[in-house]
Image (cartoon, rainbow, N blue to C red; front, side, top):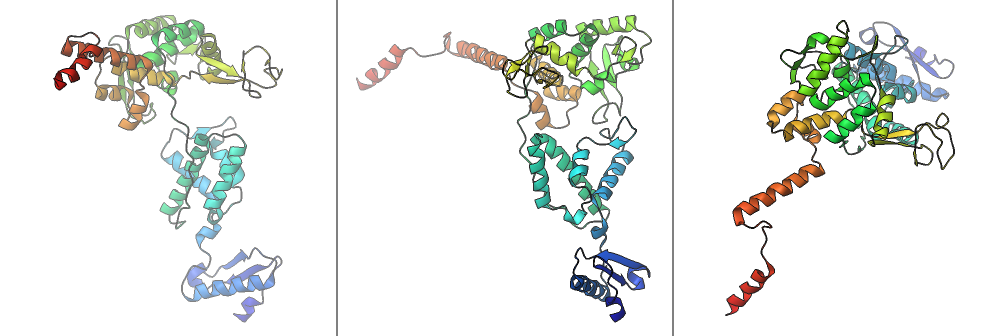
Length: 401
């Protein structure tokens, strides 16, 4: 042991040859993370003591870095063919929300990722303007990394993850008059996409990746195969008459198209700019100046800060395409379909999520008031279903007599 203690390298690197049972006779190098020689010697004695009692002198957790956790997560997503795993323009595999973790926790060891460091990460992301939901998605990825490491036996415990309170779920929906107004403002090749979302409640990714064999125009139904939906479950969706006519026109116009919805000779992948502009023209959205938060038009300068759009691009607020999914679910319920059938069409797995999409609007409340008034009228024979003031005054008088 004395000849081991005498070997101290530059920057206080503790060097030791562990017994064969622990490290198979390999010489193990470990930094004491100190320039003090005494600190290095104390660490060496500690490791030799662990060897003497049969413990692993250098637990694997000490050698696992954030990059190792990240690679294991990507391998798990690839093995399970998760849809969130994407390939960038350079062919590099990535996950949304993972890059911010890579930047902050670069060269972090797994044991150094503690609740305190997570709170620092949250604070930095909040300072950069990230929303609570965006931060929580990144934290969820990191928590998944730790769970995989524990399942693989590489780590023993998972730190506490302080998740943030997120904003209330979106409650946007589209009435039929608004739908017709928006349809007129959209480019012609996007109008069938709008109709598909409005009448079926399908997700945008499902709509844009829809292929002609999945659309049965004879039986007026859409069949989504396993693996083409978010939860990888198949489902059948009925087609309304207006949408059916639009699909027939599209099929007759472009019978050789690879996808149901395409630009002339090109697949539709994203149309956010066209959507935002159309919604603003239809009165369903607004552009907000990022500097002063004042409403601005898409092609003019802000009246407050006098900055051109290309210098400070306005932020859009208003109807989003996913609001059509909420609209489709609510319309099914309004049409009298049992909620079990509506959940089967929309393929919501849990009742809690389905209830979030089955939004109650002001029109629903007015309809409820009308039904209540009709019920009371049938019960009491009075249109207003109220008791006149004279009747209320007469009651106590008769009681006193």
